[in-house]
Length: 294
Image (cartoon, rainbow, N blue to C red; front, side, top):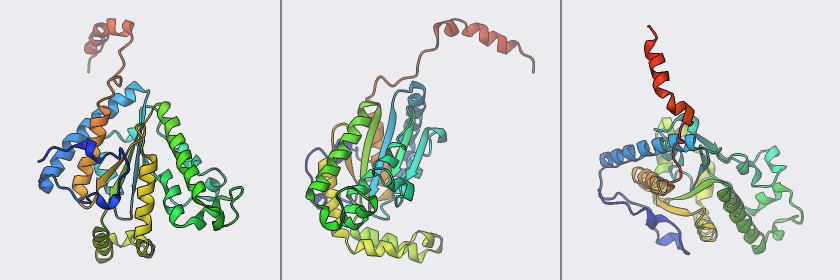
């Protein structure tokens, strides 16, 4: 299997999405990719134990992508070796009436990871500059001052949102949240095949929605919005990674590898030392337990 250059997926300067590959396999078989993922996720699971014991950082994973990009299965496979108490997944749907009574970042802020834990945002605060940009009429539901019609939502409005998102991420990063943002880059043809699979396989029918076909018709608009969002909000403290998603098994390995390579650089994340008095008496505690009769 070819070596994975995790750095090559990070957005460090302006990119064109159309020039990024949607497929990768590293010259490996499906079996080899599964074994590679198994090895990396075990290391991530061990890291999560240490993160929890250390208790000073939280880790946030943001997953974005077109419908069928493989977000759900990626979460399932990458975090399989985690303590279930150490990772929380949030799937953000259409805002509720309560959520709409707050600013658009509120529901995301309250879902941020506790120190010592991972949080995964399955769709994220970026929906507010993706779906709403493609469908600006959705913004009217937020009941914002000065926004009475779609004509009030201009370029300055979106620039302000990018700025607000950057400031939000900078704030939480400065307070101990390690941020990763992954765009699962799917080809239009691969999406077509996955949608057909949802229709053809009875056990997958529940995943299909006619709305997916409506959104597919405006594929190019979404690609343009993704490109702009990635270019305006990929920062050193909250980087975007463009992950080729046509091959799900390879995509999972890439995401897991990026996490592992980046997190192991945090040398200060280590298990705390025992209290000196407890450490000094460990032998006594051991003998006490060994004396107990069954």
